[in-house]
Image (cartoon, rainbow, N blue to C red; front, top):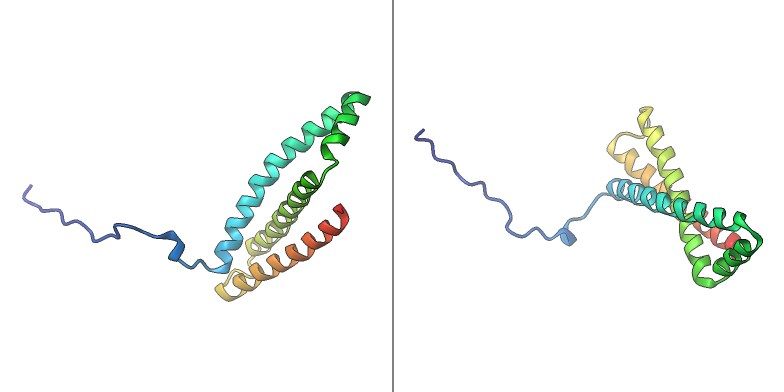
Length: 129
């Protein structure tokens, strides 16, 4: 009953911009973000597909929607997110098998995943335009 509780010294203000994350952590966060982007993009793309298959007028409306630089840019972003999610997923599966799970090899595999995604993103940009 007579115990005194001492307050731990914790930072009052933690500035997240000053914390430097390792490349493996950034790759993991980006994998989750790309998964969310892919989920919402899939819903929109399925809606566009359904609308385009509903009738000839629906198809022409979808063609009008998709025919524009802004929409092509969004499609390129969707393809890039999907590519990163696939590459990051393969990276995580390889790590689950016990390979590249050490700190150095994990950082290297994250850099390789980012590099492969950059290449696939450029390839998708060439294909979209």
